[in-house]
Length: 306
Image (cartoon, rainbow, N blue to C red; front, side):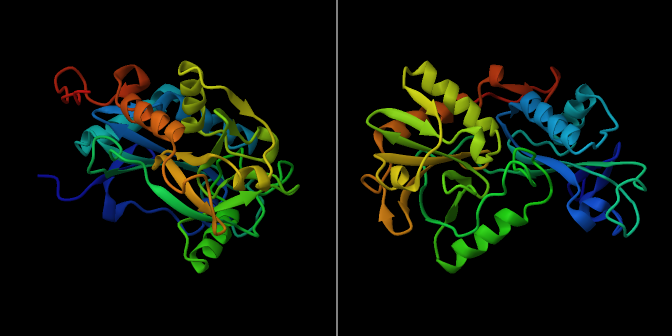
């Protein structure tokens, strides 16, 4: 019987306690690497191919060579889930620059490291009701697009860490970050939307946002539901005076913003548009056509009835 979870590490499956990388790995020394956070629901990995595509795009932007084809990367994720017998899970897929020396120069790093961590998630879907979060607009600005842009999902998350520390001191759930111009960008780990007079609005790429997988699916969902949706610059005033606002992200799905910096957003509860999108998205995530199957034909996991 398997005594502890297995981790995929450069082609091998090793027990969690033995999954180690070198202290000379540039992912540890300099945050030099890329990653994806992914969810599996009812035996299907939600938008796995889209996550893998984004991983390779991020790697290309920092000239990090991934030593395997995308198809093998998809298989590494699903095989890790199979070996841990997980139908519902959170997945962390990481590629680092690999072992080098103490110099910031990545040239001595000859082989990148690839690892996949999977952790069980109790529920096969999101809770019946979305969370309502308290937030602040943090003084920490999102890195500009011509610097350590968060369009690249890199291992350097210090910008987000500093924002979360400020939110912790303010005793709220999450921070909302502005870009260097003062426009609303995103949360520390989530994209942001607001609703005004029936129109759904979300910050554009110009504000340095991560191109969220959940964000993209929610935009498509708005189109499917005939909800007008705009991607454009958003001012703090527009956020404060919105009828509704919500975050989107891999772990949370959709979560309503009840308040921002002490100012109540709309009713301070889950608004009707947020509720409609949440209910639809909650159903979407476990549809087979939205994901990649984990288990082969000889071991099919039951699909949750909708």
